[in-house]
Amino acid sequence: MTCLLTANIGSIDPIQGMPRQTVDCDFKYYNDSNLPYPMPNLDNRLKSKYIKMQSHKFLSSDSIVWIDGRVKIISKSFVEAFTEPLNDHDVVIFKHPERITIGEEMEYIIGNMNKGNHYLLSRYGNQQMEKEYELYKSSGAADLSLYACTIFARNVNEKTNAVFNDWWEKCLQYSYFDQTMFSFVSQSLKIKVLDMKEWVKQVRINKHLV
Image (cartoon, rainbow, N blue to C red; front, side):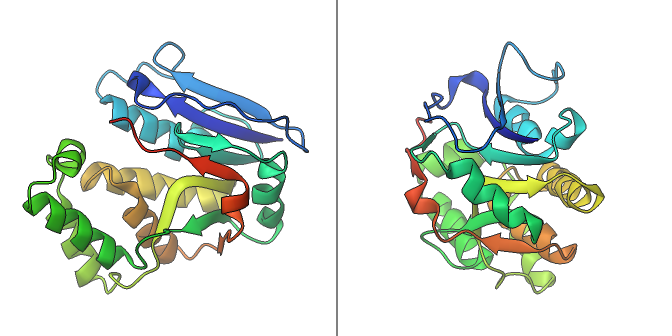
């Protein structure tokens, strides 16, 4: 069965309501009181990233649909729309609505932090963004398509587990700015990714509170 998964660690984003779905699915909502492991060495953002990227280690689902805490599902067919393509693809996700490549995104983030953007500095100021960008450029990956990792559906099997393990490890090694790294590891490990173009009919994405 599919699991619809989200997390709200540290009350960063309030969990949104959703209509009853057209297909059966489990729903797992993790917060500070019910983490799958104590994780005392991870800050709140990394705890959420762990649940997002490593759910195959503590859930027994056949497929997983992740939504960030700021996502409000507005369609009854949301889970069905995102999981049906998993018959032919490994991950269903959508492209970033504002920037096209991971190089553009890294230059946007780094450039605006250098200009003193308080919001971006509060989130990524202590992360190794420049070194991460060097990884992409030296690997010829700066022109890869950029995906918004706010929502995705994934199969749970050996192939996708390997990608999500690598995604988690590289976010620990470089930064927890995960969407550029997803493009990098999904291309490196050659999984089939579908761009879900109809996502705007399924959800509303609110702004981060912090």
